Image (cartoon, rainbow, N blue to C red; front, top):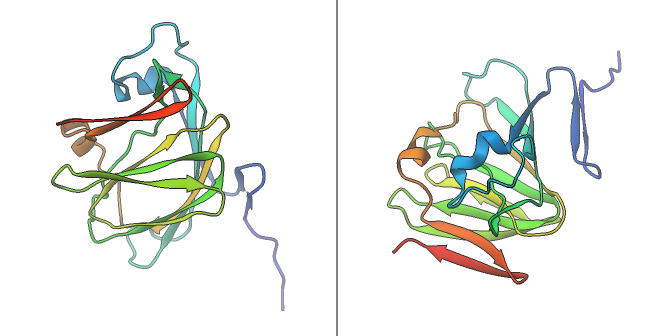
Length: 185
């Protein structure tokens, strides 16, 4: 019997996934300005807002195959609005996802298809089941990197266009060290 080294390692302490076929996507402020209610002209375009590590093996169209991911969301604010990921629906609404907190503090903002928003607190060791029919995004409400792991079916897909046409109806701000939620009426 042969024993092999793993192709990929997930450093849960430092928030890094590395190895063969790991993809790393970085989102800078220049790419994320449109997420925020009031963009901040004083924030440099090359400010790193978040990075996503993702890994998968096998045929991505085969039912049963999984993606493994890690999001590292920086503690940046944009005119007091907390930093957030772009957010998305799944293309295949039958595909759920798990998120798990690995460090930092934040919120998992979710939105039903009718526009109703709700959130769950994210922190070290929190576990979150995300129904396939809800849009979701991460929001960093703390003062350090928010690190969140994820596992989801390869056939789920990402539908960003729906969020651009119908944005989340809630925004999270930090004013005088207090969270302030502003909801569309």
